[in-house]
Length: 165
Image 1 (cartoon, rainbow, N blue to C red):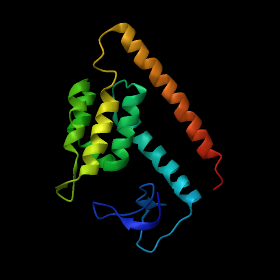
Image 2: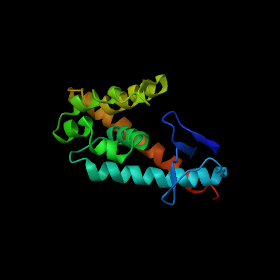
Image 3: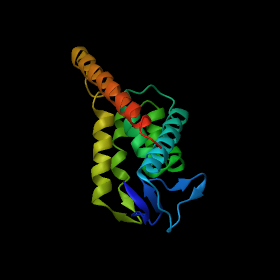
């Protein structure tokens, strides 16, 4: 989290947890915010990107797949996601093909960034975790872990919502 505006690797003015627009306007170089505002902007951004995934994806998702896609869309934007081969493959039911698309999104300004490679690898792993399991018992255990993770995430969101703004 950064409380002073900075240029991200793509050259876009950013603040907080990756916010690039506040109330519809781009972040500017002179902006400074409080930690509470950074959290509020993050929540608002997160909701926007969760809704984008819900609008664009036409197939059923496990919680981890949804979470991986929200992280991805938060970073690349809804427009890029909407035009992506990843989304096309996913909406055609090709989950494994979609998972293989994550690593292709590792460029910023035409350059491969190690940070984006790590992020995409983590998103791909999260997205893929339960789709390759064919054993019914293993799949059920994986899905139970996902439900437990969702409960933990809900606790975190609740704690964040209790943070003064």
